[in-house]
Image 1: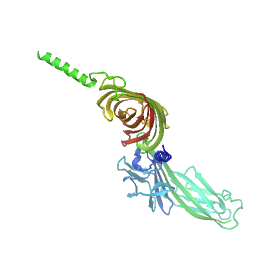
Image 2 (image 1 turned 135 degrees about the horizontal axis):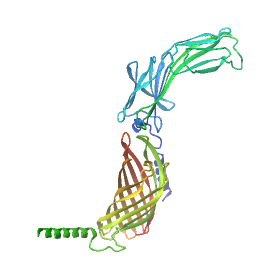
Image 3 (image 1 turned 180 degrees about the vertical axis):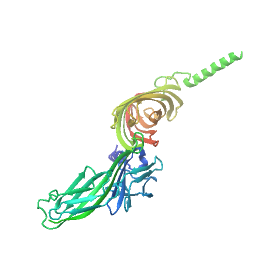
Image 4 (image 1 turned 90 degrees about the vertical axis):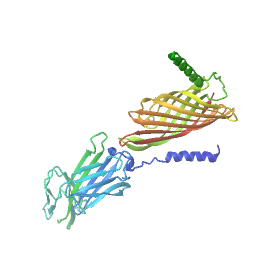
Length: 234
Length: 225
């Protein structure tokens, strides 16, 4: 065999070896029963967004062939718009707010549909912050909701190390002494210092899409987050 | 009286059919019609396709296989003979590294001729037993029916070309499994070199769909008859 023919044969073999090895991550190739739907929702008090990522045994999935996701928020059904985040497909809806639980539907042309997945959302709330003048502690208060999910308080600013505190239960109130707001190595502020105080309530769930094995999985994480500004005046 | 005639007629018909199938003479070794084929060979193949993951997801996969094969096609009678094949090898995927199969078939030679190019057509029907294919189905043994055909052309006494087709359908708990083999080979004296391709089709899953694997690779060996 001549060198040219040998090279040609080698190229054909290498082409065969290379073709089709990257996972083809389109929904036409993925069974609904193998899908992992990851739902994240955030209402930060100013706007809200719902994002859904579709995973599978072969990686993140792009919905094709007429497959589509819908959410029903406050009685209104909306199609989700496909985009890309960090190189992976993501399906999103922008909203003014998340008033409560919403429904997720996955409609497929040649496979099982998923209808009425309930995504639990903490109730909207408001918060206030007081104190941090002279020796007064920072006092935070908000509407408590016993079943409102995990509550996390964060305080950050140029004059302190960021503080994050997860609460065992939603008490509706938290007092942080000035000693707890640990200053960076430069020491406590000598002048009034701006702080950002956030309270986040998150409900997370994990359920099967179908009562069979494998039955697909849906994970949800819905967060209500409120942020207000405070000033530490020494 | 009528029963006796029916018996004689039936016996004559059976005898006629036997003569058609077996011919009137036993073909001797070295028969120039070349329906017989004994060969030892090595076969390597690259494969790629889709395997099933989960309930019904098409997942690309690929790998290599290498086999040693012994095949004997012999015709004790002019039109009627047998084919046997045994192979053992390795398949390079995570699911399996060992492959073995044994097959046998009754073979017919409906066409054989001499001329400027001698040749023959052989058709066979039989069965086999081996590990499940494609390998992602599992590593259990399975029996299967077998259909095959082979066209042999011999333009010169020392040169031989043959192409063969083989079909093995399996219906199992795993679904509807089919393998299609096609081989094209040429030989000079004792040596032969060829190319063999195979398609493994499996229909199963939720939703039910086709999982196809393509194989392609060279085969080389000895033809001793």
